[in-house]
Length: 137
Image (cartoon, rainbow, N blue to C red; front, side, top):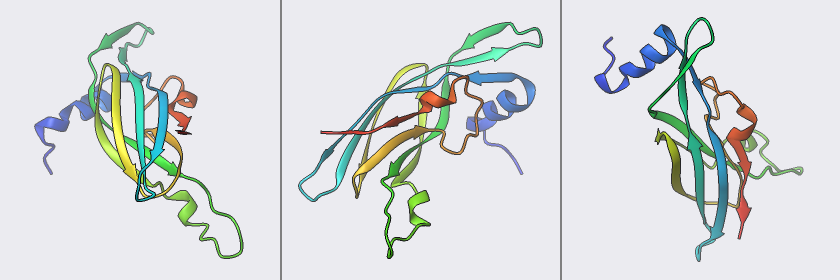
């Protein structure tokens, strides 16, 4: 199996270096559309550093693919499909660059929250700020 050139950075970041991320969702808002779907707007910041064995860190430009998910509001009750509560409304792989990033998603239902790296595949310094509740306007 051959790794495409566009993804070789992942092998280097995960196997040859100590790579840490500092990603944060800064804004998450949604508006209802005429067809009762929602447009979700997300703003986030992204940063990537390489650390050495002595704890020294070097900021490096980030140009990485990472997933962002828009979580659904849980449904409760006798007829609720509890398995569906764990499935996001949308989960999409996007390219994050160093600094501020903005994305827009269309979802069929009222969203609950937005999450960067929902499957926890990357080492983030403060994982608690990778999720933010959506403000519905």
